[in-house]
Every structure is written in structure tokens, then in C-alpha cells.
Image (cartoon, rainbow, N blue to C red):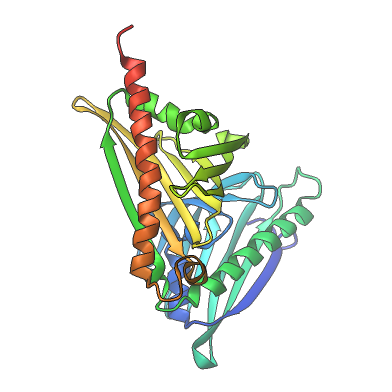
Length: 319
């Protein structure tokens, strides 16, 4: 980590209306982070055991750009602590480590402390101040989300759903992937897309604001960050989800072998109890709300996949 004199520390904390075991699970299960924490776009677990894990994370910083790094963590269940360190220097943050500590309080509450220590990149002017701003921005956002999610009635699992659908393609998977990636052409290609604004970022990322047409004729605006993966899949996270959701992330995956090709759409969403009550009514239970949300997401995904398949077929058709 460098010399003690060059190492800088940052400290953030909050009180969560949930016991330490609940908060500990939310932090140790990084697969939940894209639908819990506003900055997190995608996580991919590389190794995991009862003692710790190693994962790859993609997250936004305050200017909206997506930064990525790999981290190792150690779990101390008895000490109610999770420590972390980056695998390598990060161009934005230098070399960084830290930890989460969960202090039990009266009434089943928890004081959560998030600490960072870092060595700023020596060749960047103003790196110390910039990193401190980024940590304040993301740390505050993460702790705010943690307070909300940890206190969900019935626990986070009552409001969390994941589902996957796939279709066989009528043409090459590469052409279908091009259709999915070229989202700026969706308004002319997809019937449920009323409009779309696309901004390209570093590393090939996309910041996409989309206006979607519902069956009743109304339009809804969402905003998403999309990231291309080395395996050809496309992952995304809605940074402006619908009113009924606290978080929504997903992926498009493409497969091809000698037997044919296919496309797979996966959605993970975390419902907002207050939003569900506002939109569907106060008597609607989580399972019914989840069925309605899944139906809407599935309908749009299937239409998109079907049009991608027809596009792929047109590309491969004899001319």
C-alpha cells in the first residue's frame, strides 16, 4: 500500500434499522449490488468461499463514467467485519483497500462503518482531492441505499426476483448481438420504443435514455448504463428505474454452436414497496406485483429478441 505518510484514509458511517446479520449478507453477496447500490453497474464473482471472495466490478463515478476493478475480500463473521483490497493499482483511485464493520445497537439496529485507505496515483495532480470527492459521492449513495434495502419489510428476498428467457435465432448470433448493441436504431426497429438518446462513454460503454410505449398508450422514461463484456454478452443497469422498482439490472447473452444459435435475456429486479403501493394499490402483495412487473419486462424482452432474430435471418438470407 505504500508508505504510511502517503496513505490517506476516508470514513463514512450510518445507522441501519436492521440487525448486523442482515446488513452483513447484503454486503457479502455482491450479486445483489447492481440492484441495491446506485453506482454499481455489474459484478462478476471470480472466486468465493466461506472465508472470502474475489470479484470484478463495474461502477459509475460522479461524472457518470464507468470504472472497473477487481477486489479481494475477507469475511470475519464473528468480528462482524468485511475487509477488502484491490488486486492492482486503479488508474482512477490508485491502490485502495478498506473494510465494512457492523456494530450492533439497541432495538435490532446496526451502526455501519465504511472505511477506505488509498495511495493516490503519484502522477496525477489533484488526485487526493478528486478521490476524496468520489468516495464521498459513492459512499453516501451506498449507505443511503443500504438503509433503505436493509429495512424492507420481510427482508430483501421478499422483494427480489430474477428470471431468464431465451429464444432460438433464425440467423447468426453475431448479427443478433449487433441488433441489441445498436440501440440508437431501436426507435425505427422496435414498436415499443418511442424514443432513445444514446451517449457513448470510455471503454465502449453506453448511457441510454429510453422512452418506452406501454400497451395502454402511455410512455415511460428509463435510463440505463450498458457495458460490453469480453465474452460478447451485454450487461446493463437501470440508473433511472420505473417507480415500482428500487433497482433493475440485466444482461443479453448470445450462444452459437453447430446445432444453431440463441439469445438469452436475464432480468434481476428489486421492488420498491412504496412504489408498488402507489402504482398497483396498497393491497397488492409482493408476489402479485412481481408477476405484473415480470410480465411487462418479459413482453419487451421477447419483442426485442424476436426482432433481433428476424434481423439476423435477414442478414444471412441469400441475396
